[in-house]
Image (cartoon, rainbow, N blue to C red; front, side, top):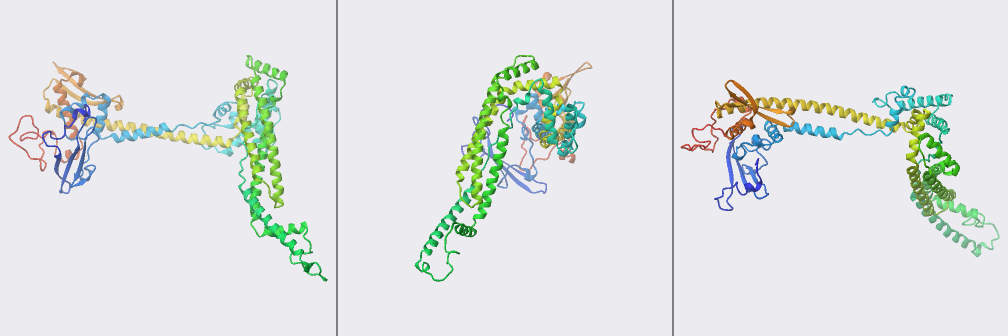
Amino acid sequence: MLGGAKNEYDRSLRNAYQPDGEPTIVRAGIEDREGNERRVERELTADFGRGQDCASRLTVHGVEVEDLSSIGIVLAEPPLRAPVLFQHSIRYALSAAPSDRLTYFKALFEIGDLDTFADALKGAIDRLAEPPVRLESEIRVCSPDPVIGPLLGDLLGDESLTESVLSERLGRACGAGVAALSGEAPGPGVSLDLLRDQLRAEVENVQRGRFDLAAWRPGPTVKGPEAGFEACRAYVEAAASVDREVEQLRTLYEAVLKVPAYEHLEHDVRCPVCDDGTLTPERLSVLREEVAAGTDLRNRRSAAERERQTAATQLRSVSDAATRLAPRASRLDDEQLAGAEASAAAILGEAVTLSAGHESARDLAASSTKLTDALSRAQSAIADASEQLDALGTFDPDAIVDALRTVGTASEASDAARGRFLAAVGPTLGRVSDALNDQVGTSGWDALVRFAEAPGKTVAELRHRNAVTRAKKEFTGAHTAIEGAKLAVFREKFAGMSDEILKWWNRLRPDEPVVFERAEPRAGGRRFVDLKAQLRAGGIVEERDALGIFSDSQLNALGLAAFLARGDPPGSALRRAGRSGPGRRRRAPRHVHRRGPARPGRCGSAGDHDLS
């Protein structure tokens, strides 16, 4: 139904005079391409209701099917699925909004799949957002620099860039920076990391005369150790089992040595449990080694040692970071702080307050001290465990886990203090850094230092973005080509359809002073369809929109002409076979009988053209 609401068609499909429960069925015999007759039935199972759609059941020879494609009948897309022209829908193509009219004609031409494909491709293009490159701003600062730019090359546009190539370019650029700022070129074979650190030191030396930014730079984020010590727990359980067995053997050996027969011997005999008749600590150690050799204690000890070494390595890493965590500004006295504020004010040309950042720096230093104390206790516990492992002794894994947990808590507290410090002083020092770089001419070198931090990650980000950009460009080109081809197909089909509508119009309304001219897409065929007509009088021809100048009867005739034209479009199999067309009588389908005499106004009667 192309107009109105569902409740306006309430209980209107079934025969109102049939008793309730009587089936409502449309039945036809259809001859397929092989000449076999197929019995097709559609039974109404639910009529239109208030807010309810209709429903039906379709069968072919009693077998329920979804559609008639199995016998070669493929219905058009909605709203053209119905093969019958209803009175209330005769003017739909004319009265519908321009955009709905376009949808109607696209369904008419069965080119909706092109729209679907083009829309899916457009959606894929929209989802291909170019990923960010974390250090892109640094790259854009370095590229135009007269010294750095030629050494780095075109990084953003180089799709073949590799980590080794970028590292080599960064090394040459950093070396040039060191030579430019210090007056002494670095020697050959120096690594990129060392060149980067040397360049950072030279930049800081240049800046320090104006403002000591390095004094306000905290160390990197501290990440606490992660160790569950499950292997150590397994080892301790095995070691405790060995100790229990050795204790049982020691009791047995002492009892044997107290046997009277061994107390009054007149000649030497070999002790059944020991070598020299005594149970010395050395002998107990040998016995323990022998018992341990018969168990998996040594394997468990190896696993526990690896776990201990991992924890020790993590603690060393945390310790190294903890020593660099607090900035040197935390040790400034009031006079030095005032001097730093005056220097920053001179650089920015406005008053600067660093007291909040200074207080946060002191809090960060205090957190760093607590972290160092926790590290000391954990490292001591790890060292004790190492001694016990060497001696196949036992220790308390839970005590080590607690010490490591304390280190983790202290690390989190230090990281939070670091964040508060950066929040308090970061914006101001960022402005100072930018202004200072501009004033002393170190902007490019400072950006190069940051750029050289992670060349591998930057290359991966650049290659990823270049791949996305290339794919997006290819998809966009394909989408443009599809849109152009779609419009060409649309216009070609429109031209043929327009001719067919005109033929039917001339048969329905011949010799009219108002004549249908053509149907054509407007705005590139993407939004609207226009229906044009001509006014002819006294040799003068004027073109107007058909909807604006046609009468109601003319609009109905135009709607009927459009319906008839779409039933037998140019290029159809029926037209090629010469079995249909305007004015041609069609053979009545089987099981559809003609009745007579003819009644006026009824299609399908004897003597009528089969227009439906």
